[in-house]
Amino acid sequence: MSEKMPTPEDKSIKPEVKETKNESKEDKRGLEQRLQETNQKLDDLKNALKSMEGIPGNQPITNPDDPNRSEMRKLLDQQYKLNGSISPIDSTNPNRKGEYEEWARAVDTSKQANKQQIASLERRIADTKFGIFKLEEEKAKIEQQIQG
Image 1 (cartoon, rainbow, N blue to C red):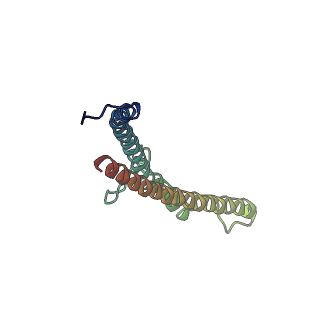
Image 2: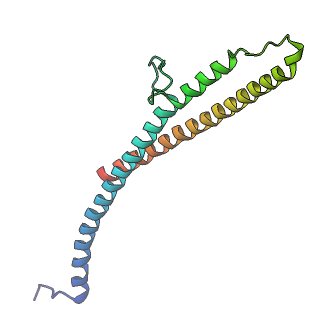
């Protein structure tokens, strides 16, 4: 009688070991799914960043209707047009002075609005870059958990 009879406590331990193995497989599947979701979010953010700031090194697109122009390029083009705008109204004509001043105020207002849009876009770009940084950190942690 050197062999010990299994007790109910011993039997309860064995199924837990099997559940742990199953749980680790499920955890790994969950981690792989999280990794896939993170990669998708990362790709989406990178594409959004590209559409906002453009692709570095590319020549500016001259066609203003081209859908591939970045948001920043469109705003900078608009700023360039506003800065170089020439009044269709003669500023020296005393009879049209009020009309000219109205035109000048409209251009100034447009310039201010354009500057605000550029600043807003720069904040969105910074936020997107930070989001990409955080997702890359999360991706590295998930990959480490899958391997470890």
